[in-house]
Image (cartoon, rainbow over all chains, first blue to last red; front, top):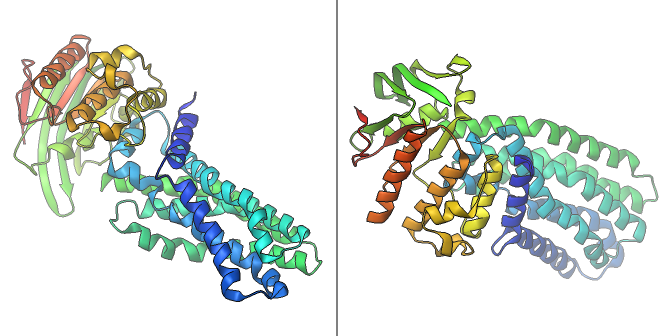
Length: 222
Length: 200
């Protein structure tokens, strides 16, 4: 197995083991989606109207829960030093960690979303759009998040600063993600919004490994 | 294989504080260098500098091998076997899983013999959270062996180990030097390899 796949598989394994981030993110997402209808009340039309936005914000926050540990765990126990000396370039290390984070949170949240859409009385077409928008948009959450995680990896309470850094950067993802669902509800084509989401994700996934690797390098020397 | 590592008038600064300057040494294949000094004198910083995590404030480090001389930090990093202050082990993963992971990441080979060599054969399927500090150190040594790198940088290699563990480290170091490897170790204890030592 290549070093890239080796690191990817290890990070997925760590996320899936007890105390891992995958279960935590899914539970958080499900709880938010359950609590909001309880708070908003049983107005089905209102629920359908806010559903896309609430589920998108819930998904972003759920993915954020485990982002601060993306590099920090390996930094604190000395693994990151050893990974940096391995044949795997730091850029690919960052990409592997991003991909592992996305598979264990973003992809899992996407798969769960149609079930939670039921709680918001979303029609099938809007549910499909929600699913597609999460599938296309959550990679950007992991990618932009990786930059934030690499910047805060040596801070003791980095998890508190991280959302302040990355949430503003993620606002386009939430706007177009929730916007695509709204468009579908209004019987308009969501293609444009989904296309912009895909473009944002592609750009973020391509560029952020370089930014994250540069920041990890700085932190290893600090 | 490396034929020598040379430091020329090396200086290291952390922030405004100068840790050391004008440091020159040369370690040839098959030799070991013990780096000694009080706490905070810069032993770990010197190792991190050689590993390429820090850049020197002045001076340079030259690795000489079959392809000539090079002072490129990235290239040097690919020759380094690292035993840091922290063990770099995950409590959730078993001893065997960790060793397989690191061997694959370093394109080395993990065989069961390595675990037996460091005295962890019976713990292979135990998650690392159940290991003692000394056993974790032994696993870190096993990783050093499977990484299969010529230049070993060891930070306090004897820390947390019992008498037999310390003897094991001495034996592994002698073996590595015997095979033409280079060792630079930050330590308070003598390495017992007839090595030179560097006082910071």
